Image (cartoon, rainbow, N blue to C red; front, top):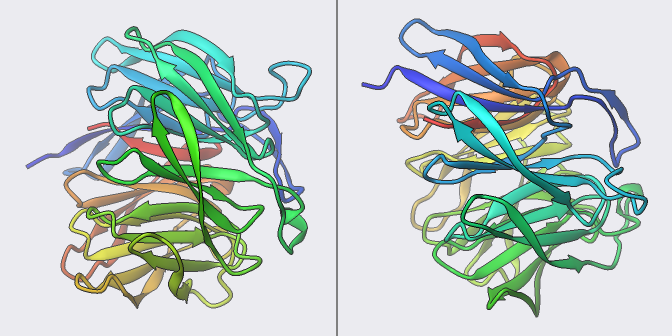
Length: 356
């Protein structure tokens, strides 16, 4: 039975201006390596990689050799773009060593993901309203290939221009979608021969939804979208041609949702809400994909920006940006319930990744 978990946490290291107009003074020092002892319910910091600015989202290669992170800034050059940094693990994942840093070709890069073969990296630029694609060299370095710019707007004050917030590939496919909070749509693309090809198709969400993150079921026929601005989960099936159903977050008055994930057994779905500091729980109908609300729990912090679930499905780790802590919950695999077992001080945490 596994008892020790290695966890990476990305933090804001300096002042940042959000799209909402809020200013936050980041207090973090970089990327933190934490270790959680599930037997003793204890956590401690093993190391901190400090030579990096605002590492707010990162991707890790499946063999744990490389890490690629966004640097959520606007000052890479005079055009107001952010950074993307490639690093490699050393000393049995105890240290990170920089490889190269390149422009994100758009302001405030906020999300990064690899393709299914991990040969390319895709970066979403929130303020740039764009996403950039990079080839991964054998040594882990990044080489810029293409930047795709969105256009359009929607109805709310935060939607006067496009804001690409995340990208997800369909499982075992070269098709992917880009969630645009500013235009209320998931835009479909095909990636082939180092070229992003638009399909002319998109999933249109209700005006004012503000799609932020989304996840696919393992069979790729179902998609759950976090509508940050409306505080909802939208469900689409098949080719994502139309929204089938929408559910509000479970906590009264919930709005400003941030992250969504399915449990490892796919029986439950979890939704974090920044405004009410809660995590909503839903049961998933395996046949239809429809959700049944099963209540909510406090995130035991403020502004649950991101969370991750352990590979064995036993624990949920939540990064609470405004209360400077990581909270840990045990997961009841039968009911989907969450039980708070630990809070650990970490300054301005905004992203969390369980390594092992």
